Image 1 (cartoon, helix red, strand yellow):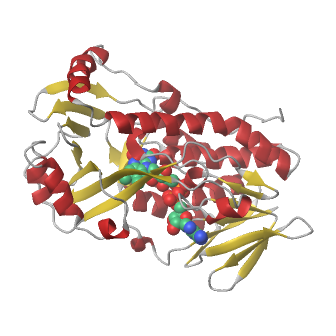
Image 2 (cartoon, rainbow, N blue to C red; image 1 turned 120 degrees about the horizontal axis):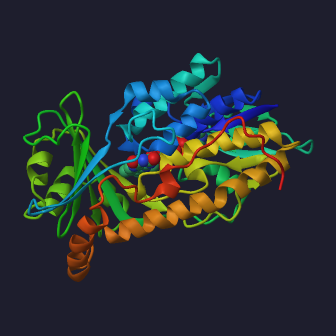
Image 3 (spheres, protein in one colour; image 1 turned 90 degrees about the vertical axis):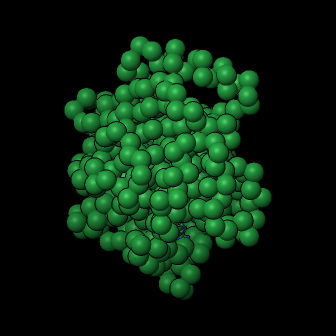
Length: 393
Ligand SMILES: Cc1cc2nc3c(=O)[nH]c(=O)nc-3n(C[C@H](O)[C@H](O)[C@H](O)COP(=O)(O)OP(=O)(O)OC[C@H]3O[C@@H](n4cnc5c(N)ncnc54)[C@H](O)[C@@H]3O)c2cc1C
């Protein structure tokens, strides 16, 4: 069997690596010509994401490019510490807690690993549409007019997936949440976070988080809501917008943002409670193409990696493509939709009303008072055993 994989982000190269381990060849098609085109945000890869990578022996290059962010501190804008927590270790306890890295570095590590294993990764190839031949194969047509044919096609093409629409022309579009995340990378910051620690500050009008890399740079992000979502809003100065939002509210956010040069980006936040149809014939969507979640729970990439491994296992163990896709959906749908819902709730709670704020500041230390605690074990303690044989159900 031979697969066409659309998207060279997180799920695309991970799926290619997992399929190869399952004995299936593939080629990855990525729209952007080079890795530098999309700088993107930084992210935390929790234990379940590392576990999924371990299932396909692809964790080392990601560990090499990332650093540990295993402590979290919650403070108010007045500097009052609400709580601290140690985040989970991986399910086997033999790796440090969440790993922090830029999304672009994660994609590059996975693409590099795919290429090292002999998988073809084609850049600068944007899928225009895909269709099924009468014989049941899939033809992918790219915007440059070229085509390729495979036995099946995996849409790992992210939030605004073309494959999702090729599968179901009536698929709902992802919803802009009204929020944007502004991320910045400061070289010489006036304030440093303690080693391996994510400092999260709940202000009255803004939520601000930062951490310091082992090299001494400080990475930060803040959520901005209430923009109009129009194209003009996109072109505004994100740094100025972030400053306007945090000024006179969250300390030391103003100093950190002011100390940041041009390395500031803004990203629209989309989510989709449910994608009704994940597969049709020999086409399927994985990762954000199937279940875009707001980033608040910090698990979109980890879920994309879990998807990649489980899809390959289904194709390895089930007798044909429709059965494999059906089993994959059975295994994944409930979990990923729960993530989307959880993340949406977290998003709404990030900037609470004054009364809720008092309640939160009262409850948080009590919830975390027993030391190391995992607020969402169902998310992070998810283990995939590559050797488990999957049966149809
Ligand atoms: C601000 C922010 C913070 C986040 N923080 C976290 C976090 O802490 N932890 C976490 O786990 N996740 C986090 N996420 C989510 C995470 O980045 C995504 O869930 C993850 O990248 C999804 O991977 P993917 O491969 O499905 O999609 P993507 O990473 O979006 O990759 C899709 C790829 O497909 C390509 N593509 C698109 N259309 C086409 C086409 N027509 N033809 C060819 N190629 C195409 C794109 O160029 C892209 O490279 C965050 C996201 C944001 C925005």
